[in-house]
Length: 173
Image (cartoon, rainbow, N blue to C red):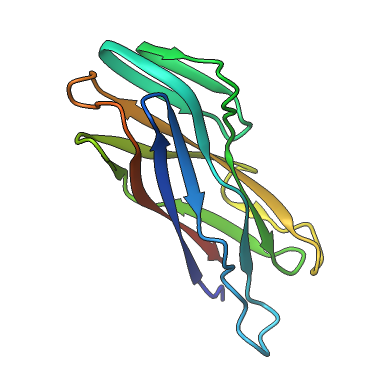
């Protein structure tokens, strides 16, 4: 019989003036319960960052894959202003052979410092879900997660800092 144990991490997302979006994850891990070697721990290694971009009259999307590749749709324009983009990276510590699935929470609403809001959808993961832990603690399995940011027109998404929260649940089966 499989035990289902859930661990929820909360992540913060924000954008930097007009052209970029950052994701900030909580630094504290979800620690294992003492005396139960079957639990998992999740650690934040790298926060998600959508990089520098601007939008035209219509808007579109900024898509960040779990492998760190960025693309855009609509009339969103990628900018190369020395602001890098990258996927979120987590490390999962669990006994070898543990089956772990990832459940994405609902879309996150990012609220702008100058008004407006954007929606962020949590993307896929690498390794895909579910995956089997292949590292014996204290070693950890690396999990990369991407996302899609829906960008509106400059009227609905004026320049500024955007922030919000999104949830991911790691299930030990």
